[in-house]
Length: 215
Image (cartoon, rainbow, N blue to C red; front, side, top):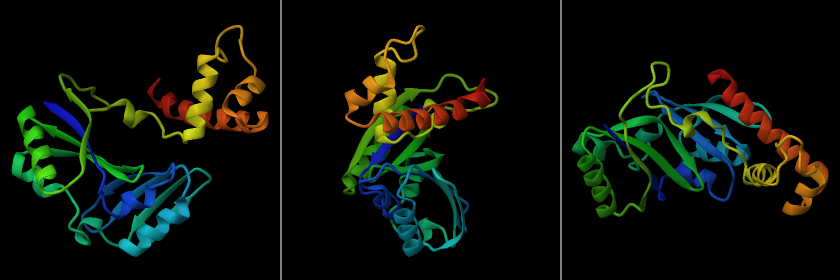
């Protein structure tokens, strides 16, 4: 089996909702409605786009994430979906669909790599702006996580959280003994010490929370 992730830059209203933000939307289609998981900010902007596109039946929210049940299914309200390309070439869509950075990200599975290539070419020929983010051969699956990738396990960090965490790691914050202070990290990224510590704590909390279930 072969897997590829396509980035489609003209990815519809949910993609538009993430443009210029750190928000990421994951979509599970249930035919009559969609289940959306929104992380990292821009919640109200996302809700406005969802409400205008398909309506909102219910939602749950906390500080860093939002779960939305829509009133209708997006694919019934727009012609911008990839299912017909998948059917034409015998490819499978691996849920969830992901939207981030103003684009739609689709994980596709095929028995033959030529099917993925043909699907890509048809999308481009029909005017879609498509990029191939990842491509790999799938040779084995885990019993408790078939076709699981790091993208499924690792949480989405904001750009500032990624920056602060990366600087902290590179400069020895997690070495024993510790080689850098949070004040030095803050200076390196151009923020106040307390701000850097807050970004670092949030990044650590997300990463630990995502990994602990797999330990």
